[in-house]
Length: 255
Ligand code: PGA
Image (cartoon, rainbow, N blue to C red; front, side, top):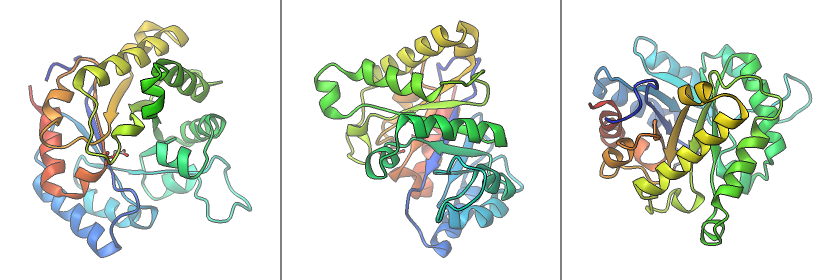
């Protein structure tokens, strides 16, 4: 893989609201059996209800566990919410923040994303911050404006990029089978890195992982991962099939 040597690839599987506990544990067991030692970091993000048990299944491996969301307050009267501290207490290492489904369906704002990022880092979670444009925005040449706004607002008051991962996920490519071309994805990832360089330092930007998500599958993973600014993938649909997920991990680990 032609990825920059300074960044270890990351493949995260976003299970979304899929699988019962039995199905989820069977999938996790299959993944543990199938995945061979890899040069990529591998993270499973199952539903909250499965995290503890999936954590036990991957305990003796290098595979880590993440959550798909969290709330920014530490505790209190927030019915239905889960805090960063709670996630840490069940062995979670990563958390996806600002996924477009959270932004679109649950009306999460850039300010919410920023508060969640602060809370996640404070608790010791590694946040995967998702950003991306709609098809309409892309067609109107507003992709860069949208990305710059999301990235900049997510990072308000954040002192360092350490432990933060960004995921570029064009909304029109999520769950649609329509993937960004490697060039489109790399262009935006490179643009994100340039924003990070100007907000922090070129050095911090150089070491920050920026992954791609949106209909990543075993067929397109190789060419996407080959791009110099794509440091891995946030995988939705394809991560629910062990064999497909394993193939994507191999794409990120080769070379
Ligand atoms: P997809 O989802 O791979 O099914 O397009 C990616 C994501 O939403 O993270």
